[in-house]
Structure formats: structure tokens, C-alpha cells
Image 1 (cartoon, helix red, strand yellow):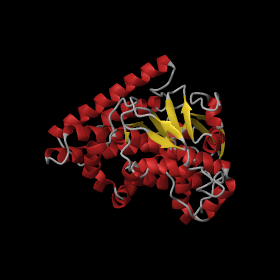
Image 2 (cartoon, helix red, strand yellow; image 1 turned 120 degrees about the vertical axis):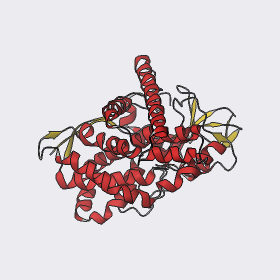
Image 3 (cartoon, helix red, strand yellow; image 1 turned 90 degrees about the vertical axis):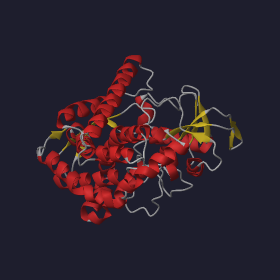
Image 4 (tube, rainbow, N blue to C red; image 1 turned 180 degrees about the vertical axis):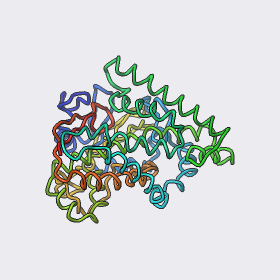
Amino acid sequence: MNAIVDVLSPEYHDELYHRYDILRREHPVYFDASRNIWMITRYDDVRRLLRHPEGTLNGDTGHSYIPSLATSDGELHATVRKGVIGEFNRGVAERLAPMIESIADELFDALPATGDIDLYHSVILRLPQQFMTRFLGFPESEAGHWHELGKILMGADPASDDEPSATVALQLLDDFAAMIQQVLEEKRRHPGDDHLSWLVAREQAGVLTAEEVTIFANCLGFAGVDTTINLLGNGTGLLARFPEQRRKLLANPQLLDGAIEEMLRMEPPAQGLPRRLTADLTLHDTVIPAGSEISLVFAAANHDPEHYPDPEAFDIERANKDHLALGFGLHKCVGQHIARAEARAFFPRLLQKYPEYEIIESRWRLSHWARGYAALTIRA
């Protein structure tokens, strides 16, 4: 088992679900000594611990370089979530759909009808970043900086063992945090019709503190973009790998919502969620001591055959849609409806323009937590 978990190896990401299957069957509570972390891989265990009724978890793992909802817990997490959740419901996402669709149209219209197309850099990366720039209310002068920052961050993991890469990533994260603060200060002086101005108004009304505004702005600005980029890329890969499901979706566009849920189940944008135990936890006759870091591995849980019949089949009509790709309970992704709205804009346009595309080049990100591509080129 020494080599079964090697998160910075290309082979690991190519064989990810085979390796998770071994862990789930033989080592449902597995200690990865290389990262000093316990991996929890069965669906029922991950779901129960996401709810953490025993109160044994918090988000302080030491891997957070920018405070966000994912790395917050307790009263702070509850206050921020309660203060913003109404602004991110399904109805709000539907009202944002025309803006998202307009951006998607611009990006796809700029692509050639045939040939080899770098879909990752031309659309998959740009759609979430351009939408979030407009939604948050970043000035146009920052749009290029935002895009370049995000593009580099997508390929740089701050937890990497590669020292130069880690150093560059940390500096970029510092730059990102400083940019968020600068724009928030501008919104306090000159509010506009955008989401950062809305957050500032909540702060000025006493609903949120300045710290809470920063936490949620960080969550939107980085995690929101990153999650959607991975969803769009992973879904593109799945439709290429399973052409019969792609043909089914082309013939029946009403299956799109189910297809998006199956994309999320099969290839979650994040492999899991790191947490730290505040008390001993006994699971499958294994005692995990207080203070230990654990990983609730969504990607493994979503392929658990005890919960999903034929889990390795990509089935856009799958009845069971209770995947954990976007978390569960209090740690359900706040921006989930917006991410789905972006996917609903992206995939019909992809299939309309390139119904028979094939992937000619792809490369997975070598990341501890993210599951997504660093490169994806199609031939049409």
C-alpha cells in the first residue's frame, strides 16, 4: 500500500478511481503517511462526518492560505452562511443565466468551426472567470490580472512538495487576497450594482462583520471559479469518454440537468474536504486520535458500489442523484446553483458547435484536493 496514494504523481490521477476502490474495500480508514492525513473513503462514513453530529470536526487544517467558508466552522461559519445564503438560491441563479449565456456565446462564437481547439484556455477557464469578474464587480482594469492569476493558480498547488511551485503559488494567493481587499475598500467608498457591493451593504447594516465579508468574498473569488472550471472540464472529458451518453444528450436536451449531476458524481471538482478532529474518532475499529487531520474523500464516496449500482458507468439518467461532490449539510457549496447555471450554458453550446468532438490532448492537475484538467484540447 505504500504507493497506492501518491497525489503528485500523474499515474495516481490517471488511475484515481481504481486506487480509491482498493482503499474503500480494503482500507476504509487509511493513513497516508506522506501527507500525515487519514483518508475516509466510504459513502456512509463521509456523509455522516460531513454532518458531524458528534461535534468532532473543525476546518483548521493548516492548509488554508486564504480564509473561506470551506475552512471555517462553528459560529463564524454559521453566521457567514446565514448572512448570504438567500442571495445564492436557485432563483438568483436563474436571473443570472442571461449574463452567463451571453459570456458563453461570446467565447464559443470566437472559436473556429473545425480543427484542433484549446478548449481549456479558450472557454473552460474563461467562462467562470469572466462571469465572476462581472458578478463580483471587479473593475475592467483588473480583469486581465484576475484571468492570469487564476490561470497560474489552476496549475500551482500550495501544498505541493515542489518548493518553487509552492513559493509562486503562495505569492499568487497573497496577491489575490490583497486584490480582494483593495476592491472591497473601493466598494465601501463607491458601491455599485454588483455582489461585492451587496456584501459591503450587509456589513454596513450590521449583518456581517468585515472579517465575514472577506471570508465570503474569498470563497466566491477563488473557490467559486475553481469549482466551475473543473466541472466544465471534467464534464467535457466524460462526454468524450462515453459517446453513447453524449448522443443521448444530443437527442434529448431535457436530460441536461441529470447529465450535470452525473458529471458531478463521476468526477467531483474537489476530491474531498480536509478537516481536523477535536476528539478521538473510532471508525471501522480504527481509533483516529484528536488533533489528526482527515480527508473526507468525496470522489471515492461517489463511486461506492454500496450506494451506487454500477458506479463506474456514466449514466445521465441515473436515478440516484444524492452525490457528495458539492458537500453536504452545513458544508454544502453555497454557490452550487450558480455553478450548475454555468454548466447549463456551457454544455449545450459545446455540443451544438462540436457534436462529434474528440479529445486529442489532456493533462490532469497534480493536486492534493482539486480534480480537474490543466490542459484539454479537442479536435472538431
